[in-house]
Length: 344
Ligand SMILES: [Zn+2]
Image (tube, rainbow, N blue to C red; front, side, top):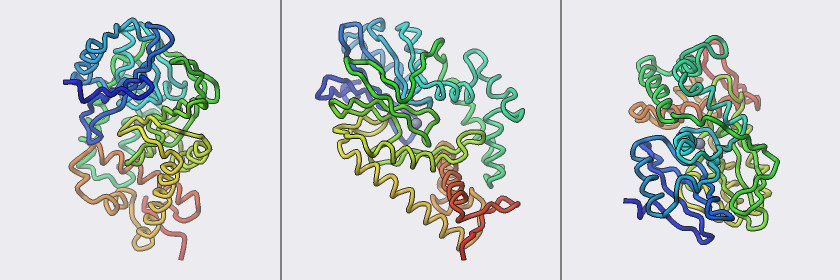
């Protein structure tokens, strides 16, 4: 069952493809052997589903690793497909969970604290509304048809179970500091735009980079606009790419798809992709002023309505592009929430 899901890297690391019930299909978790038998590091354990915990039990058994031999659980970011099993692993191993303070705060903001998950989400938050309510209200204002709102709400609330139990205790990684695991002193590289407080782990000696979802091969990391979050996530993402471009990377170990070698080329491709997408959106608005949801459908097609998960990502990402175009002075948002070109 797990033979195809575990691959040993040339340096002895194990990559585990933890199944996901989404189009992404799996998230890459990495198990790094350390300086002794009881010094395994686990990076991004995955989303809490029965299928995923079955896989992990089989992997641990198959590789002869005891829960107590995991010395640390390390998270690149708070997204459910990375963070979701951190608490489950902590319960079994007693290991500390490491993530950035910002990522941890965002997890609490999204799903509440353990045992009060629904309260954290439904209760008062920010302007007296929960994140879910605030996101839905924003999406509706940006043109999401009311007929899709209920499905979107159920989809958002469904994540609480997928990240529970949340870790009981979290230790904070400090971007721009150093962190020791697997016998290596890692440089922690902060990155924004995909997820607040995202951290990548860079070993300048070997050129290895554990990059989470900050840079992915084949697919473009989702740029997540959220009400009350980063007001310009795409601008932040492009800034982070520019900063990461200077790293001398021999192999990047991403959160999805396969490890890859052409890191700087991939960084440039992602930046180019977004610039082209920005031009395309500016063109669409010049043709016809539109609400964000209409721009999203004009870009991605109506088929997205059949997949709430993908629709949410597409709409978040479309808004992120529109907001950056507004900041660049190309568009403005009219009172009726349609985007209007400021260029002739
Ligand atoms: Zn992510």
